[in-house]
Image (cartoon, rainbow, N blue to C red):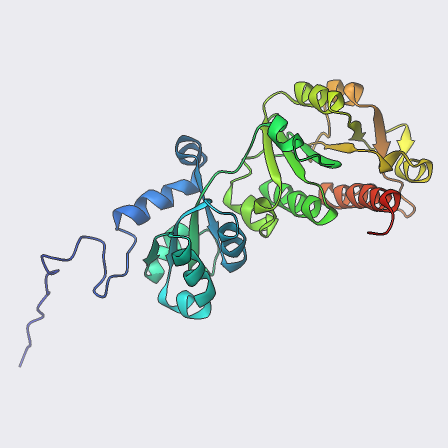
Length: 292
C-alpha cells in the first residue's frame, strides 16, 4: 500500500518566516533586515552593526542604549540566561531564532547562537578628548579587519581611552573586526577621521605628543622609555600592513619611532608592534603617576 504524503500548510495566524513555537527563521523580515548588516553599505546607511557571541553581547549590553535587539537560539538562551535577563531588564527586544537564522546572522563556522543588533558608537574627537585620556591609538589606512580588531583590543588592555580609525581604514564595525576586538569595541571611545593630517593637528593642539611608528625611525623605543618622554600624554600612529604610514604623516609627527629588534627577525607585524609601543607608554605613564 502506498501512503500519500500530506504537506501541512502554515496556520493562517502564523506569520511567514516564523517556525511553529514562535522562533524566527532566516525568512523572517527582522532576521532578513538584520542579516544585511553584514554588508558595510547597510551598516553605514542604518548606523547599526552586529555583535555576535556571548562576550561581545555581554559587553554591548553593559553600554546602556547600545543594543536594539537580541537574537538568540533556544540552546544559547539556556547557556546564557544572564544575557537574556539583562536584555529584558534593559527593555531590549529578545527574539528567539532557529539555527538556520543564526547561520545567516553570523560569519563564524560554528555560530554561538546569540547576536545583538547594536547602534554604532563612534564619537567626534572633541568629545573623546573631553574625557582627558592620556593614551590615544590611531590606525591609519589599516585594511585588515582582524589586525584592526586585535590592535583595538590591545589598546583597550593598555589603557588607551581613544582609538581612531583614520584615512582609508577598515570599517571598525566589520564583523571580523568586532570579533577580534573581543568586546573592547564597547570599552573605548571610537573616532573615525577621513583626514589623518587634520586629526594629528587636533591631537597636537590638545597637548599630545604624536609618535609615528616606522622601521626606519630615527628614534628607537628604548631611548624614549629611558628619557621619560612616554610619561606625557601620547598619541601613537600605526600605519597599514603593506606600506606603513604615508610620508606626510611621518613628517607631521613629533618623532618617528622604531621598535628595536635584538634577534634576527626582519620586523614585527602590526599587532605585535602596537602592543610593544602601547604597553611601553602605559608603563611609563603609570610609573609617573606613582602608586594609586
